[in-house]
Image 1 (cartoon, rainbow, N blue to C red):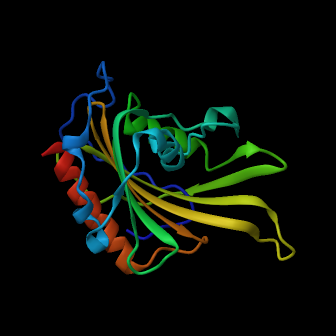
Image 2: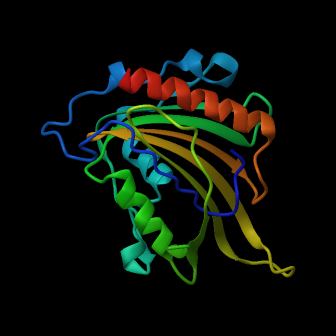
Length: 218
């Protein structure tokens, strides 16, 4: 799967009859997470529990502070309770990372993809001084058995425009998701710039996604 400017979403419901139904208590998900040696390069670091809410805000696009315009484009938050987030550097470059997360979510992937199709472009932050514009488009996630799957690609343009008309800073993320009941797996590749990720990084992201789904649901 190659990234395209924006947000990609493809659903394949193959066995989870209940998707997104909340489980009281949000139990710890450590047993459902990949391990650091599953990452490209065989290394990753667990995000401390105190920093998990901020990490999930970055992954989901649901800011801890500020606003989203239009308001109905605000992505739903996921629960930080019991969540596990790992981050590892791309061994091929110092400007990109791989992230995996396993979380509880009351929102279904269908609800997520329906919302993102309605919101191909929205603004996060405090315009006009401190803001990011998020642009979206579509692709496919590697198919998974017995779970819903989706793929999301974002280009986040932060700040104003320079003299050439380009954003002062662009970041691209390609996110693969799988969900069964209220448990959601999220695997993300984040890199600087608005260009596509490399073929090698695409393959590595797909492999990490397969491992994350296996760890969570099989």
